[in-house]
Length: 135
Image (cartoon, rainbow, N blue to C red; front, side, top):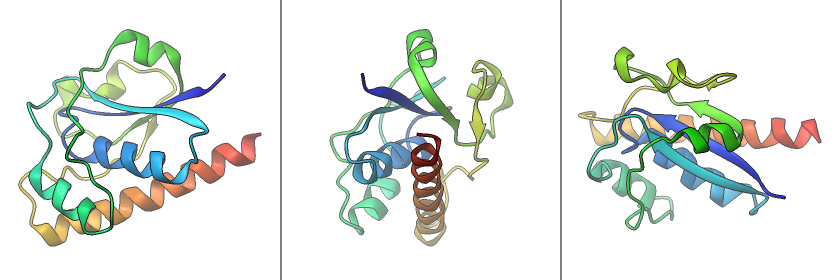
């Protein structure tokens, strides 16, 4: 049975979407990966789509999703991307959450979003390696 890996943030418009895309790319379909938000945006951050496209990952068909109790219950690993909005922070609702504390790309320059993208890629690769080590 495939295990679920869940990436959560507030709007599910940037960080968690990038993490989902990187995990799908690098985990070789060993897991069911999803991202979601406590207060999802209506669309993905266009700068996030642009910086991911720069490295060959097309996120144009992804859309923000609402975090559900079943997503939380079924997840093998849950990663909180970081919270600016403490009232809506997924870490408040999720037990055994891994917290990466990554800055929100919202209203950041393209250079800053590239740095966030690269940080997320590094964290995802580390997470995949740590899961592989657990086997």
